[in-house]
Amino acid sequence: MKFTHLLGIGAVALSTVACTTNPITGRSSLQIANNSEILTMSAQEYKTTLSKSKIITGTADAKRITSVGSRIKSAAERYYQSIGRSADLTNYNWEFNLIQSNELNAWCMPGGKVAVYTGILPVTKNDNGLAVVMGHEVSHALAGHGNERISQAMVAQYGGSILGGTISNSQWAGIFEKVYPIGSQVALLKYGRNQESEADQMGLYLMSMAGYDPREAIPFWNRMEGAASGSRQPEFLSTHPNPETRISDINKNLPKALEYYKAAGGKI
Image 1: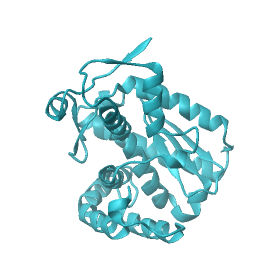
Image 2: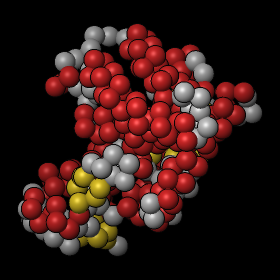
Image 3: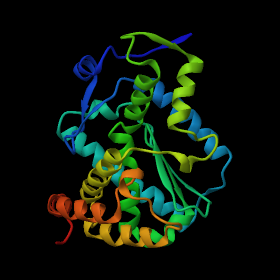
């Protein structure tokens, strides 16, 4: 059995046939990988990760993860429905789990497979802080950042030599594992700076649509910066925007976020 993918014959041709526009931020990206295959692999890897982790259930914190995640999920679904793009989320099978770990981490696999680590909860402090984290991570999935990263790896590996070609199971698995090295450590998931900045913006809007106060985003990221250990790399060497850039961008996007928050019943 072989997986079929669109492999490029050049940047112009690829951008013509596989350019995807984010319906919330307006950013365009190249996404040529097969989403159904990505969702299948993501579900498998998520299940494997949970089987090797201590999952917290039934506690107040576990219930908060489910509650905040469900509200953000519902807000995303309402928005996508309002713009006629509900089909984008048809194959999502959302899950929200709290994992026992001291790591300051949370993530969302394609298809809405969300994990939050207990180590980040003291930094989130409250539901608004948790919504900042979960909105950001869910945005990576909704924006197709996994597909974008896989597409970049496919083009880099195959040199854009084939359009509509096929790659084997092992080749596809190798590409997927480079982008999502979950077998070794989920914390190794990496996105580019543009993707991280987009997840900040999109996540800010989603949490606002869900009725969480977007003004809590700046205090959260300040706490996160303070809690992070080790020295920070210069922005051009890091996949995350530096704190000054992140705060500046949040302030720029805050007025629109507050409009969404007010429309969701929030008090300005």
